[in-house]
Amino acid sequence: MLILSRTRLALMAALLLLVGSASLAAQTARPVPIDSHINGIRAFEYAKQFAAIGPRYVFSSGHAKAEQFIRQQFAHDQLQQDDFSATTPIGIVPMHNFIVRYPGSASCIYVLASHYDTNYSLRNTSYVGANDGASTTGLLMEIANHLRGHTLSGCSVWLVFFDGEEAIRDEWAGTDNTYGSRHLAARWSSEGVLPRIKAFILFDMIGDKDLSVERDQNSTPHLLDTVAAAAKNLQLQKYFFARENEVGDDHVPFKQRGVPVADIIDFDYGPGNGYWHTPQDTIDKISPHSLQVVGDVAFETLRLLNLQK
Image (cartoon, rainbow, N blue to C red; front, side, top):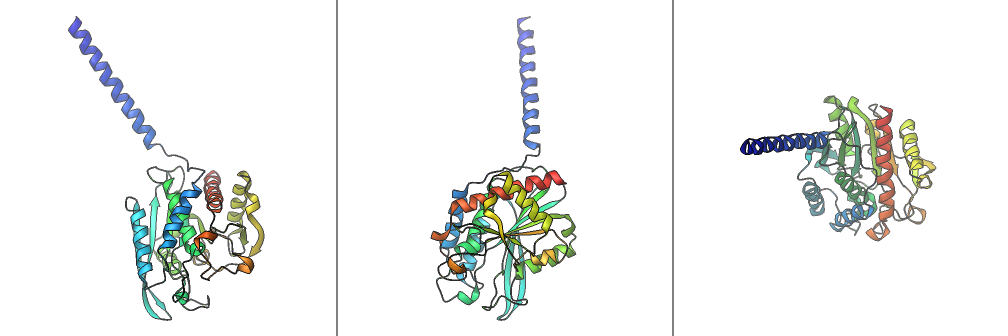
């Protein structure tokens, strides 16, 4: 009898362990909501490291180092390098977008995007684009820390790092800009991806210590309204939409193809926007708090969008 009891106890223990393991696996597999708060200091550190690479214009060593930095940060994620050739005023230029996918429980997609290059016309200066490219690159890298390792509730979230947003010539006009976003919008159109994108949210120049995000007239009104509601929910509305502007940026090629878009941009950087596209765009002008604000509002926006589906 004693031996039989021990055998029964062992079988019961094994059964309980098996049930417990299955329960844990079920919990792990269950879709999780998107985290609502980022670490602004950590986002700033990514931006600081990225800006320290130096100028990141096409054909430069800094451009290659920037690409390698992105590859290293997402080495264990679903990272795709989107290679293409762009026809520019200086000839055919090889460029590279980077796409990182985090799966959701639904087939729809939210795209969070930025650009990582710097202006080619400023190549003979010390311009490093700490706000214009590095701040938003750092923000997306910190956002990724809250997305990886889970199946997200609702739509998948794709992070996109665009190449070739900046003009080759000094004037940002015509088709001498947004090379990466125009290429990817066309590619995703042909591949049937665009109808799945329920929101394309672009971040640009949002590290300014005096943060004031503009309401962009080239963005989709109802998506901006959701951003405004998210900011209000977090009591951060004072940083958003006190003024309006019409901004040409990487969201426009997607808007032109019918995708709902929002450009989250503070286009008033320094006195009279005097730091923009100058060597004064340095990391000391960037605030971890501003990155925190924008990142938290981005996650709250995605939460609200999931509720609207």
